[in-house]
Image 1 (cartoon, rainbow, N blue to C red):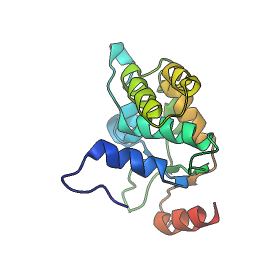
Image 2 (cartoon, rainbow, N blue to C red):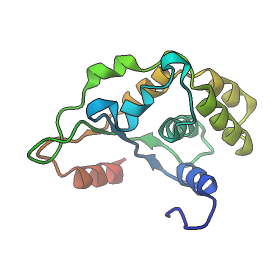
Image 3 (cartoon, rainbow, N blue to C red):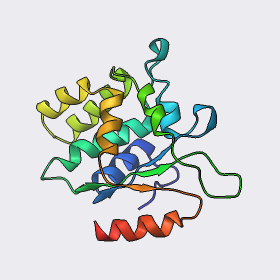
Image 4 (cartoon, rainbow, N blue to C red):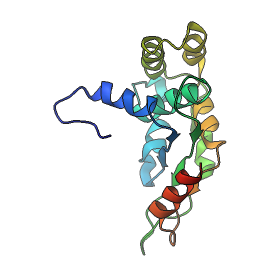
Length: 166
């Protein structure tokens, strides 16, 4: 299902994560620290914090994957580096992951805890989520076997094939 025009974005967003069997986050790091992970690396720098929707999705998916009542049973990250000049993508800059904050994103974690509370997933999950650092979440998601986009791959076909096998 898609998010519907004119309807609550947050409700559709939560429903999408909750009803997914395989969570497939697109994790990118482009030039000038742009992309989903590049921007996430700014959280914690000089006290900067905000609700980051990529981080929020990853937290929800992690908790849901570990809950037997939830539909999510796997996380398959798609890892995308900067765009290559001739098309496709360069190698993902894994060395930049060291920049992720060891502190929690209080804003994002509080939003995740509230959503999990609304879903009735228990106080233990809520308290654990509040303590998760940005680095812990990213590391946890990247411990799952995923797909790395490259200059020669048809990433969409590869991801589709892998999701169907999961």
